[in-house]
Image 1 (cartoon, rainbow, N blue to C red):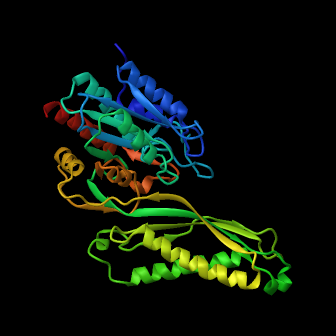
Image 2 (spheres, rainbow, N blue to C red; image 1 turned 180 degrees about the horizontal axis):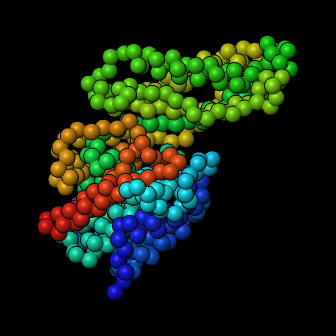
Image 3 (spheres, helix red, strand yellow; image 1 turned 90 degrees about the vertical axis):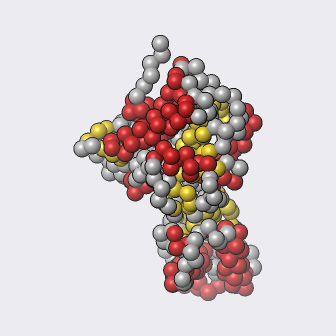
Amino acid sequence: MPTRLTPRQILAQLVSFPSVSRDSNLPLIDWVEEYLASHGISAHRHYNDDGDKAALFAHVGPWEEGAVVLSGHTDVVPVDGQPWTDDPFVLTERDGKLYGRGAADMKGFDALSIWALVEAQARGVNRPLQIALSYDEEVGCTGAPPLIEAMQKVLPKGTAAIIGEPSMMKTVTGHKSGRGYWIDVWGHEVHSSILHTGINAIMEAAKIIAWENEVNAEQRAKTPSPIAAMFVPPWTTLHTGLIEGGTAANITAKHCRFDFGFRAVPDETLDDWHVRLMAKVAEVEAEMKAVVPETRIDVTERFSVPGLRPETEGAAEEIIRQVTGDNATHVVSYGTEAGHFQSAGYSAAVCGPGDIAQAHQPDEFITIAQFEAGAAFMDRLVTRLQEV
């Protein structure tokens, strides 16, 4: 008989793979595929264009539509420069907590999903269960759309997608949309003593960043709509977290690159915000070209994540509430792959163990109590699929 690992043993295996988004996740995928195969479950892969990463998906139960889909991502954020107490890629227990990169975000849910799929195979279920493990979620959910497309070509389409981002096992039915860009400002170098004859790319970039602050202040001051009021904060936010440029303190910078992003409330569209951004870019660029015509600003989209819209009698929400007993309304401001599933025709909701506040932190952890709550959820879910 093949060995059936506990959820915690599976989590320890997953954490041991340093599947940072910039690196390959194939060792982790190899392990998951081999483990599922040892229990008679055939998994399928979808590779990225470079072939160094893969998504994995599998189906257990009757070969028919209507499956519950357990969706998680396999990539994690870097640990570079973070002060970890222990090795971040070794699951470590201390004081009722399980520490390790990805323990909360979101290898805890991945481990529970793998366990549930093997349980469903062993017990037998009348309604199918599927698992979908993606790559590159941490760099803009870019791996989810090709995964979802590949799944639908191979597996019977599922009905309800449960995306297991850490929500403290609460039923999350809505989240903001998001779009990210690289903005490259190309100026003209001159000695800083005659800066009026050149274009300092950093200082021109600063005009756009200052505009972000102005818009954020305007957004904060206005009365939120009923839908926006559900979120914290109850407005669309603009943000820059990375910036680089320049060659020397006494030279006007020829180039400056910075990231730019929106997190939009559901009743505002990313396309409308894109128009506002491009109008500001055009304004700044026109001022630059008036001095040096060859200067320019390039805007490159990095990712676009659709929001999750609350559904009326949604199948995903219904099954989560049935299993958890949570009937409260919850929305979050972070983005997930749920919006992509919903856009592809699945009912979708978010529910997973752990606290989002732990995501990306040094000494990231999930409490044992939360992990056990997630395991109990999976056990009840499999039982429900048996009874359908």
